[in-house]
Image (cartoon, rainbow, N blue to C red; front, side, top):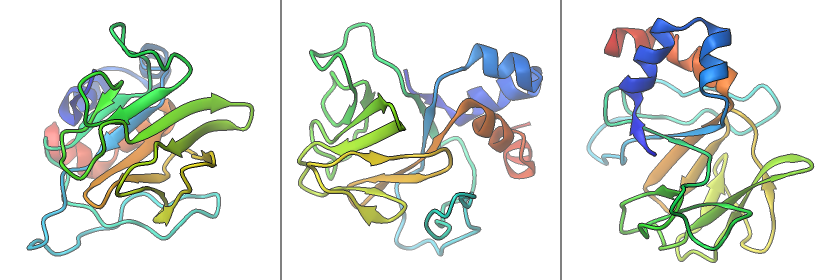
Length: 176
């Protein structure tokens, strides 16, 4: 279930790292607010420490950020091996944006770690600003950026990095 970033910020404020990670062990997508072409780019987001892409610009932290845990919904669709992302209401992570396809992308835990595959979407799926082919799996690591079409961006986090992000000065100042 997608929740507001402020919910998780409050949880991180109330729990030390080990108890937060135990309570929220799943990977998450922090879904960024839709880009506003009239707003200038602001501070860079997290950079990757494993040779990833350049930092991504993002809007200031506020409650328009949403968090989608990478987990199956109980009332989900027949794609049992994948976490689906898309516009249709039966996806595991639903993104209500016209530029997002009904079934836009699939996440899967594989031997090499989490992977994402584009679901033959019209507008593409991007990891660290690189469009991924729809017929290939692309490994995603914590703090990588993932974009679904031209307007919906997200950051992929493991629970430890997510906790560190939530305890950052910028998030604390925005919500606590």
